[in-house]
Image 1 (tube, rainbow, N blue to C red):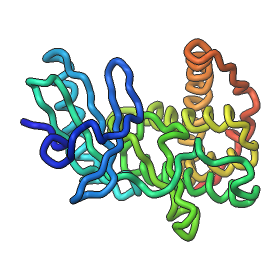
Image 2: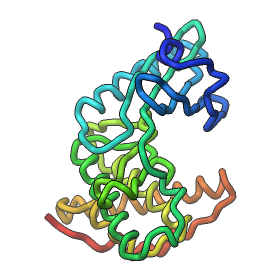
Image 3: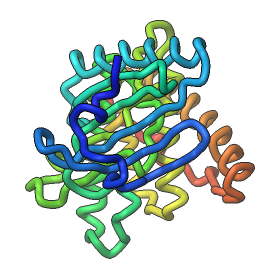
Image 4: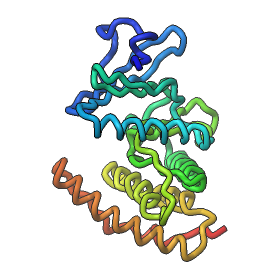
Length: 249
């Protein structure tokens, strides 16, 4: 199978690099048929990595068939064994990811509304049975021109999605913890974090929320330690009293 980009995009010299590491290269490019696109190339050096990409591709296609939460539109998933490359192509989502929002871009009430909307989208995603897998600020896009916070929120970077069958709460809680950790790093207020938490766990039973709290706190501690070791950043995860608030269905 050949790569979608080889057939539908111009010379790679015109692609704009967005990320480049040992395993993944990300470009932004333009397609006459699809407009602005994000092209992700994954190194597949051996049969094991090629099998993992094939399984990931099946999972990703299934995700798009089942989930109605706003996400970056998937254009193609393809691979080329001769080049030892896997490829995912998405249409660019309008808006900016949360890393691009400054504290004075929104008033306090708007931040609360935005975080509540993100929590609602997470709730919808989780209730569909799926988890994002890497719900950091860079993977949440907000379009201020959409009319309201709920309509303006969408998720990107979806190769890590999964649909856990047995005991899904740990993975769902990891999504929640990953987002909260970024919010703590960005020094977002506890009030807006409470809005996110209440929306993300809305409608669950008291027992389920208790489990979410336990796993979220566990993930927060583990992820903050990982960030400290990897980035040299220390995040205080002790001020999470908002996790003891709940909005039962």
